[in-house]
Amino acid sequence: MMCLGVSPDKYSFAALIKACSCLTALEQGRQIQANAIKLEYASDQFVGTLLVDMYAKCGSIQESYKLFKRMNVRNIASWNAMLVGLAQHGNGEEALNFFKQMRCQDIKPDSITFVGVLSACSHSGLVSKAYGYFNSMHSMYGIEPKIEHYSCLVDVLGRAGHVHQAKKLIESMPFEPSASMYRALLGGANYKEMQKLETNQWDKVNETRKMMKSRSIKKDPGYSWIDVKSKVHLFVVDDKSHPQASAIYDKLEELIQIIGEEGYTPDTDYVMHDVEEE
Image 1 (cartoon, rainbow, N blue to C red):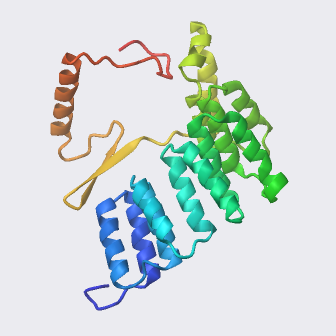
Image 2: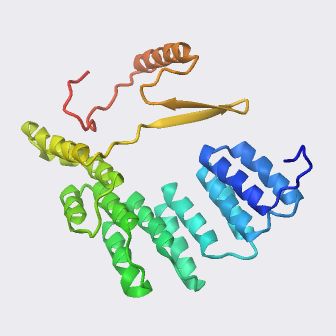
Image 3: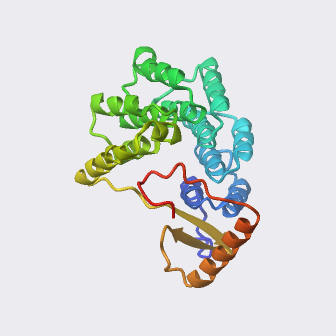
């Protein structure tokens, strides 16, 4: 576009900022923001909100907050971007205080707001508060809870170790359970819960896994990526397709040996499969 002399508009910048968010490409995001400032689009409410979201998703929550505070006009999307960003970074109490600020500013929350609020409760282990906010959605704001709100509440209960309560919630809700709910339920079977199980009760976990399989629900594979010299390298669990895979695994083995010599031992208490110690 630039080489052809086509000047980008706010929608061009929106697409570029969204791309940086998806790739967590912070440096490229900063460069795009600089271009947006030069072309006087950075002050646009639409572009500004996406920049707040981008910095939060890239891990720069402080920069995100600075941008939010500098915005001249803020709508519900701007507030939501900041609230969800705080919640995703584990700043639960700060996110809930931010929600209180919203209400003091007479900003009416929407369904996305409550995804952030419930996520904040999850990261802070605030079960009773989560139920309070969940119930207030309809009673105070006329918002019908959607499946994503139920999923957040299941996550709150799962993280707090209330696995049976989370299971009852899934069974009672007016939606078909999503894959993320079952993942939250499995993840909720933490060490404290596992200590209560007899060794012959692994069939309870297997039963849940079979139920997921029968409904064609699969766990998304874990992956990560790094940006080296403007090139993105993606790594998927148990994948050796990277051209330098052999050297990478050799280096990992070397690091594992070094940390082992320093006294590190892996904690296998949280393994959610009935497997041997190895």
